[in-house]
Image (spheres, rainbow over the protein chains, first blue to last red):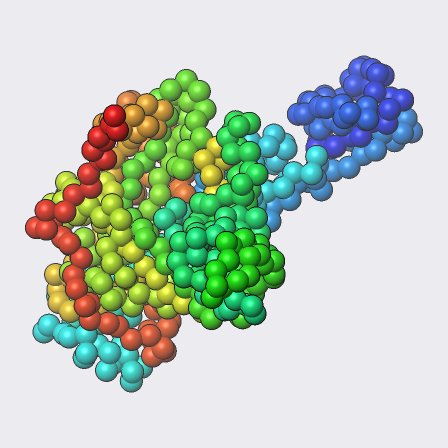
Length: 135
Length: 401
């Protein structure tokens, strides 16, 4: 079972297409939509977790690319500015996926991009604006 | 075996002083006992790094030609208003000051991305800031307006002067209401969703000297990465609170007013902070050395997180209405474990004061002392203590008819 967290950008012409349906039906992928929005210029952005067999996943990705969907790993859109972080720990209880973790011996915070689902719950909580989500 | 500060300073000058942090002393006392540890150790260093609203800095910017009197006029640094009720070229910027056009909480919760605390961080970091001022003009100070870049290196004086820092213990904030609230203790989730605390616990300066036997007016300290001094007791200094058998206050108690040369300080230890829905702030690094003059003083410095208790307070209702109600007591070992129990419910905890940074400050101050760069001071005047009768009173409102 392979898994990918991706930010998919749909150009205007694809915004009204049932692409998720095809990913599930034709490629047998599990599609977990983490966030979705259509921007004012009618470009669609979808944060998804795709999982399935390695081959169907690759084929599904090809299908998206051929349609003209831009694919980018989610991790690229999330930045933790470590130099701004003071390790106050305010983000620890709010993070639903444990992307932020605390070493309770040293009381230092660390961030695992791969666990982040870009929910943005930490943004209003961080006093030092150490997290930036470009999505 | 009592030592004097003068004797300890002689050892510091010779590079022979034994200095440990308030964290290291705990293991040392466990291992050797208080009597032996008191004999061996000369200084225990403490540290804290937390948001401290009552902070600010004053500057003397130097005279323009022709001269201008900012006193009684209006002045802004990067569009944030500064206080001008002084002489011609002295201004003071407070940590919580906001640009006039900041929407505040008009769109709730306000973002508060920039204000006085951030400007102080930028000035300390050597960045240029824009001064804009308007004055009314006098015979001796005829000029009426001024717009110029300022840099800390060109200012005559740049002094951090914080009327209240370094709280000796503090509330744990929770929210019993059914909606999210935005406070100076951070974002509090409804129905006991989280509990936020703000103290370095066993490393915090005044928790290591509960009766202010050592820390007093004139004490030389680590302030914002430079050298500073305790100028006075801080505002809201409240020594007459409930204390545990170990003398440690079981809630907010003493405070310090501190000052020091901003030019020596660093943006690593003075950081602008933002509290959504509340405002801006300055997070300040402070470290205080405690000379081990006798066994009693050493015992206090060996205080552990599990021996320091504080009160859990509802910021949904009790705090804003001014009610002194506690939902129970917890200690800092419980708070640092990540979960406490309030009204029978497990509540996840988060800090606002950085313990990791407090460890670093105590370590830096230890290094300074060991190298002989930092000598200890006798206090000029002790802070009001438990026998002073000093309390923290609410405002007695007298309606104006």
